[in-house]
Image 1 (tube, rainbow, N blue to C red):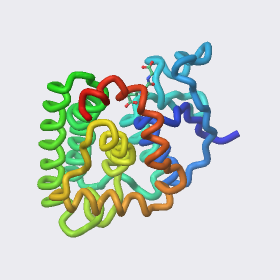
Image 2: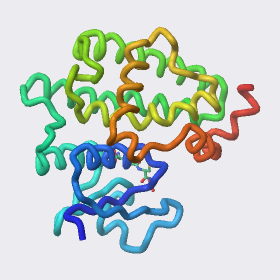
Image 3: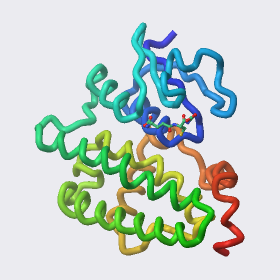
Image 4: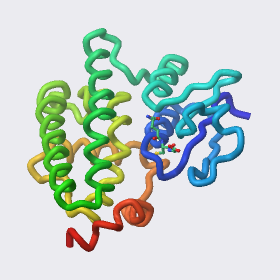
Amino acid sequence: MAEITIYSAVVCPYAHRTRLVLQEKGIDFDLVEIDLQNKPEGFTKVSPYGKVPAITHGDERVWESAVINEYLDEVFPHPPLLPSNPIAKAQARIWVDFANTRFVPAFSNLLRNPEPQKQEEAKQELYKHLEFIENEAFGKLSQDGPYWFGESISLVDFTFFPWFERWAALREYRGFAIPAEFTRIKQWKHALKERDSVKAIAHSKEFYIERYAKFAAPAVAAVR
Ligand SMILES: N[C@@H](CCC(=O)N[C@@H](CS)C(=O)NCC(=O)O)C(=O)O
């Protein structure tokens, strides 16, 4: 039995974040796939909010992907996935918060909202967030490196990447590809896709297009 058990669901981007961290650090883990439509009895004993991801580490349990990832980084410090300098660490946490409170909601609104007017607003919102990432993260923090913090991959890269791996669903159902002007974001996505940790658990565009059909389906007729 491995030291860590992760409760995950293959389609869940939040669980994907934590699985990427486990892969990158080479942590031995057991995986429990949760059927979110039919959660096993007692699941809330492990995951009080009833969500994935959650982990157990011996008798301890941790939930919420951003918190789990920081916990794993502290307990399994090699390779480190947060900068050591306090200001850079604060910036990393600001980006994780940006992902959770701004970027992900815009992505979800665009994919899930059946109303064309709301989709248009979400598209504009998401465009604005991409522009902010391009200029503030890649234009300033990252400088010439491929990752959010330059040469070293960090929790921030793994926090955003699951939504970028799923971008084919936005393109398919909402006609929204990553705009060509965001060249650094595109290079970053490519660099991430080439990492062994990412490749080990990657799914194809077709996989996501099929899996997200039920969330996006009501509006397909309206946008095409
Ligand atoms: N804030 C949570 C979000 C996790 C989340 O929303 N997970 C979804 C699947 S992607 C879930 O478990 N949903 C089941 C439910 O809400 O009943 C995190 O970062 O871990």
